[in-house]
Amino acid sequence: MDENLNEPTTPGRPERAAKKSAPRASKATARKAPAKVTPATPAKATPAKATKAKVTPAKATKAKVTPAKAATAKVTPAKAAPVKATRAKPATPAKPAMPAKPAAPKAAVSAAPVRKAAAVQALVSLPPEPEPVPEPEPVSEPEPVSEPEPVSEPEPVSVPEPAASAPEPVSEADVERAWKDNRLAQVLYHDWEAGTYDEKWSISFDERCISYARDRFSAVVGAEVLRTERWPYARCLEIGAGTGFFSLNLRQAGVVDEVHVSDVSAGMVESARRNAEGLGFEVQGAVAGAEELPYDDDTFDLVVGHAVIHHIPDVEAALREVLRVLRPGGRFVIAGEPTRIGDWYARWLGRATWELTTAVTRLSPLREKWARSQEELDASSRAAALEAVVDLHTFVPEELAALAERAGATRIRVQTEELLAAVVGWPIRTFEAAVNPEALGWGWASFAYRSWQRLSALDRVLSRALPDSIFYNVGITGTKPIG
Image (cartoon, rainbow, N blue to C red):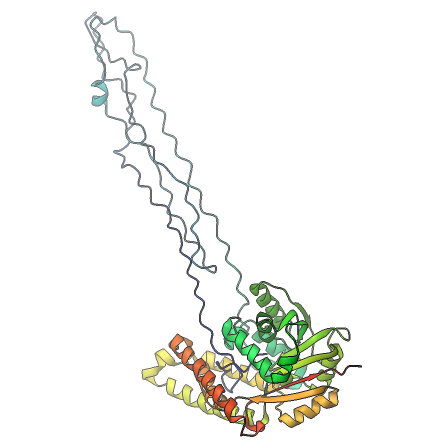
């Protein structure tokens, strides 16, 4: 997959990486939670004790006793001040990955207290000629004010599942087994990398990587093909697709239409499908090695790959399969492969930068901010050891062209890129992998990417005078013979 963008490397040795894309911070404004309903402070809500209004019965004499007509007294209990308990609306989540803030706690609405007995007596009217006092009927206690319906809790906001979980660490036993079985090594390494591959290599599907993919494609095919072959190619297959970096960005650039992906790793194929869904379209995927593609003859108009054939045990057999599934006249484009000389100096620069950076960041004044934990460094070293198992080839441009010719390709063209961009880029990438990522900000990422762009432009000028073999990347294109 994409291992040539100007970004972090797997510690322990240099890798091919993409430049870091700008973080996408989508700021959605959450609605305010409903205001807290403050209940009226109850003055010991003492229900008017069935007020018998302290009636002192007359001593069997018909004295003019003014009874407080307990049942008929206009006792105006203070109406439980109706509090408008508005149902709390679910708060809108600020970000898709964040759950909504819970609504404010439910207010317990209680009735306002009933006036005291003295206030009740003040409202009783005295008749001029009272009737004999019958035994007063007991005053029924006021009905309790019903509790308001509880405010419903906001429905939980569904949080999207993460694109993939973090990979399990590679053990020393895994590396040992991989040395003895390269097919296992390829599956193990790429399955392990699938969940974090895009983050590790700063792969994105925005304008930065769309431009990168389109420019790499254009550089390999050359100006003549750009003039004579129309975009988009109807059906495209990416071999060793990884997370779909090359083909999905080519689709967004308008170079291809229908996309199919294949990879030896089921985890990578699933990541590519998920990335496509996130972009609003679907891809067809197959778990398969490039030497045995599960497609009929003459199926595709274009087959592409990026940083893939250096992983394939039998490159010539893979190119024969590519030509088989292409329709007559169909084209293949492979980009981002390491040259023999370029791989040598990239590895040397990477190792030197790693040793220097990890030594300096262990010093006490820098350790807290800049150093990675020893556990992270050990895991990175094991991953680097496993990557050394899956990186099988480097290429001399002329030899790669001859290999494609033996496989049956016609109209073959090779193109190399990156000299100064690689000489500066590998130390930058290795430094990023060796330090605490929180110590680096957007300013650093911008500096690294702009440096790569400027140096790549200078390399295009140097390529007119310097031999192809000293540049870091090589790409190749060719077509299937007609008839």
